[in-house]
Image: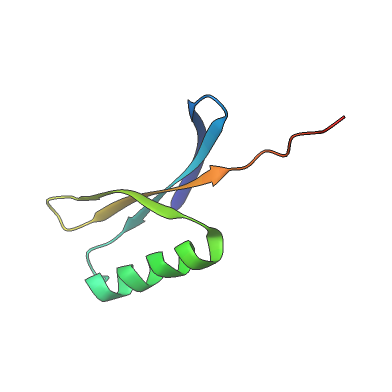
Length: 72
């Protein structure tokens, strides 16, 4: 399950964020492989990981949005 939204942190730099949740049944190695796949093929980087008391991993990924500037 993932949810995506956009945010502009600095002037001219925009980031797209994606929230992904992994249940406790996924091992650390499986989660690592899935996140590496997203990083290599989607351009995502790790922003934040939170492991809850029940073992669920909530991961926030981000990637930079590059806007094309029209030249005259």
